[in-house]
Image (cartoon, rainbow, N blue to C red; front, top):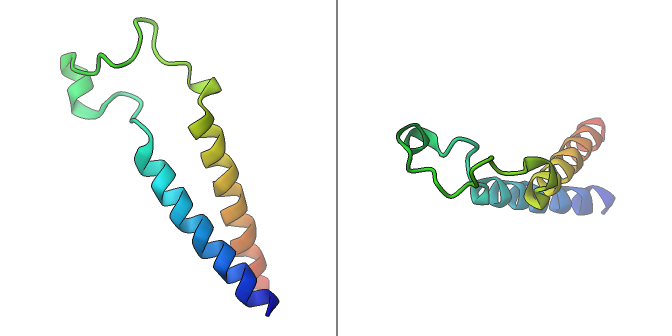
Length: 74
């Protein structure tokens, strides 16, 4: 029963992590940033250290790795 709960949390975390990664904007806006169309950032660039999506991604990735390790041991 405990393993089933951990597997369900693992898959939910996996899908949440994929969705959050797809929502984030790339750092240089891909190829369009090279030609000046990446003007959505400010003049001095975005402050990525305070981005809540980045910290949530790190937390979800940590949970994913820990759950993956626990499930591999079980």
